[in-house]
Amino acid sequence: MSTLIVPPIPPSPRDDAMQLYRAFKGFGCDTSAVINILAHRDATQRAYIQQEYRTIYSEELSKRLEKELRGKLEVTAVLLWMHDPAGRDATIVRKCLTVDANIQGATEVICSRTPSQLQHLRQIYHSKFGTYMEHDIEATTFGDHKKILLAFLTTPRHEGYEVNREIAQQDAKFLYKAGEKKLGTDEKAFIRIFSERSAAHLAAISSYYHDMYGHSLEKAVKNETSGHFAYALLTIVRCAEHPGKYFAKVLHKAMKGLGTNDATLIRVIVTRTEIDMQYIKAEYLKKYRKTLNDAVHSETSGHYRDFLLQLLGPNV
Image (cartoon, rainbow, N blue to C red; front, side):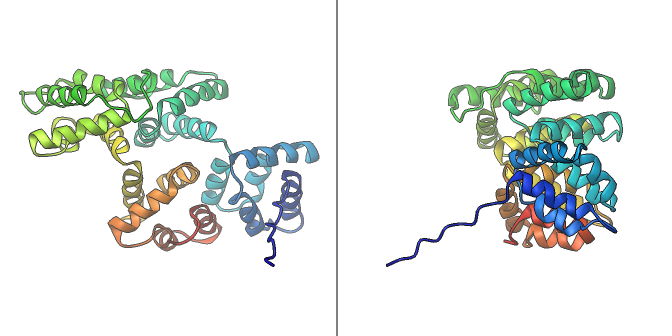
């Protein structure tokens, strides 16, 4: 007769809140205990833990974490992780636009999100900061880059996988005529297609473009545009085709060469852990012949390293 194995009951949010409080007590914070709890709780559980902590101890958990955690990078990573996904994206974009002047970081977040994620992000941004994201984009970006961000952020797009192949083929021809076929570039045409078409449709356009003109739509974008505008278009098309591959490349670039771009490392790992990290890890291993965990391990240290590795999960 087989024995029924009952999985252990996970700790309640109240238990977790009390364990965290105990980790804060005494001489110095038990950072390992804090990380072991928080890195293994999903967004809903983290929200409940914060609610319970507030109820029991009459203080915000995020404020206590900020006081107790020592390293700047671990503080940044853990505090970002404590947000729900839309609140986290709003916090990142706001900081990128108004504090760090990290236009590329803001562009990455906006141009890699789905229409429904962007709609929620805009609502949270306004309720959190008392201003519209569009206003901050208007104030901090310029030219065609500003136009593509605003169009991509506000234009409704289909999120399904259905594609009208005939229209996708026409769009590929339209982009060729607007770019590589003529002297100069019709940027408005690129903005319209990239902001109005669904991810699945854009992936189909890219495939037709390659079939008809012998190279990728990505290459055409690189040939015809530059700067932040090109970065926005490339992010949109790459995420339409394969977001896992796109983020694997972003992470590799953040760790390549002398020094590590920790802001990018934190942003991508923390925001993608609950979305598609298993695909990013698989693409990273396939392209760079090294696990993402091993790369992160060699570029980071201390509790900061421990936290990121626990978010990444098994080293495969």
